[in-house]
Amino acid sequence: MSLSPLTISGVSSMSADFQTVLSRAVSIASVPLNALQNRETDALQKKAQLGAMSSPLADVGAAIATLGKIASSQAVSVSSSNYAKVSVTNSGATTPATYSITNIMSVASAASEVTATHYEDPANSPVASNGAIRLVVGSKEYNFTPSSNDLNAIRDKINSLGAGVSATVLTADAGSYLSLSSQTTGQTTLQLIDDPEGAATNLMTSANQGTNAQFDLNGLTITRPSNTVTDALPGVSLTVAAKTATDEAITVTVATDRSQLSSAIQDFVTKYNTVVDQVNGQVGASAGLLSGDTLVREISIDLRSVAGYQASGTVKSLAEMGVSFSTTGKMSFDATKFSALSDSQVSGAFSFFGSTTSGFGALAKKFEQLSDPLGGLVKLQLDGYDRTDKRLQTQIATMTMRINDMQKSLSAKLQMADALLAGIESQQKTISATLTSLNYVLYGKPAS
Image (cartoon, rainbow, N blue to C red; front, side, top):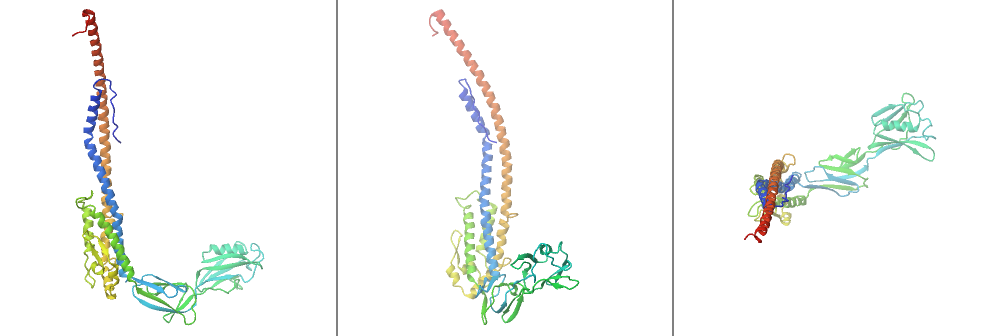
């Protein structure tokens, strides 16, 4: 609701004065309303400024946590000398090492068979001798009798069993065949037995019962049903794609990659400086509306705890890794200085950053407590601004209604006064005209 200024459509000589009285009354009554509106504007601006800090605070926390994660894993990277045959991914490796893969004898494949004979009509040609069939998939067996003794019905029944096998009907030059394919790789038994309680004849060929992946790892034989091997090397996942030639060796290397830590430090510095700029905007002579705010002071304290963090190891501070500070509290990172660190100093840097629960990395929790979207300190204060805004809106609406009512009432009274005055002024003009006429009649001239 907003104020709706009223205009007195007066006809008396005092109508302009009456309008001034009305406008002045509304202006005086609006003083506390304007104060409420200014308070609401301030609350919304504070909310906007604080809300703009939430995401950068979360970014700083995430950057610190990333440093902890990289440090806890020793920033290792894994590589393969031949990705075309063996690809590798880091699944948690923390210890540098070198491994040799040789004699890739086979790559894992899925079992796939077709019926040994063809059938003229997939919808009518009889398949089973007495209708009873057993599907064998590895160590599991499924006995069933299809709705009708033909390829289509057998296909549909097998696909409904959930046995990990896909059945299709293939049409070739000689006729129709039933094809069975395992949905997983690895050597297995895939059969379709006719008359399981009698002759027990396998209707399928035995040309492809699937294969396992098999290779030597540092001279030890590894056999797995899948080409992706996650349990052979600690923290390293292997994917076998092709066989190796005789005497061919593929080297898998797990090594420390200091560039990971360097990039993470630079990312942290950038995000840290973003928050510093926002905090600096709320202090000093040109401070914003959050000047003196308790939460802003809390953020400043957390920033200082990060900047001044001291460890007890061989690397004790950020400065030893190429991080410096300006007079405004912003960081800069010298990547060249970091690159010149010795291996033992890099190891000390890992100890400095620790993990997400210890060392420098544990400081991420401070920023998570601030920026958590559900219960963080920023969210709680933003909710407080919302409550304040709602309360002020209610007060503003109530006061606006009262001023509008007062304005209507006063306007009606002034309009009535204007009409009365206009009537008196009209009567005065009539009396004056009558007196003038009498003077002309009696004395031949107007009154002197």
